[in-house]
Image (cartoon, rainbow, N blue to C red; front, side, top):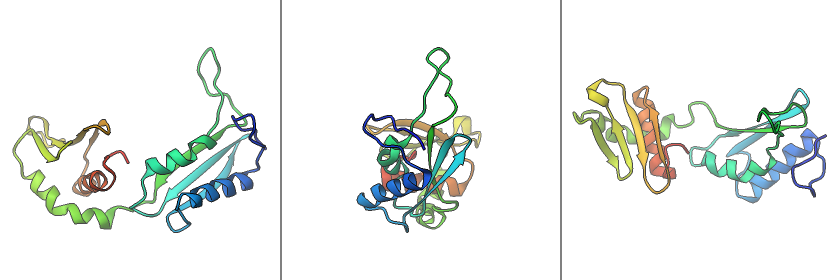
Length: 173
């Protein structure tokens, strides 16, 4: 049993926590085909794992919906998370979820990789960076949504970043 951060929240078992999260996701239009929820004990705390099973679902949107379930206390002096009665939320995409849909962007990715420029514009706000033509690629997003950079390890990952930007407006989605 754990007490929520909100004074009015009642204590919930892991089973009740799982059902509450599933119900809230369902209210926002996400069913069991799109996301799955599991809750496990981890010591005296609970770990909630939400797996996204649809490439059209944004991890950030799911995180926003369930964020209020996450709770933990920190030591006021050290900032360290105190043990016990914590709820940790992990929202992740299923393995290889984007493989098929990201292939639709293969032609775009191939064209970008042919560029001999150090910075190549993919879309407005999305750039591929190849510093000093070293082959160590980075993808950079800089627009009104956010500013972030990730290493690109292979062709499939580049296609995935392009898909995420085109679908969600963010490579960090």
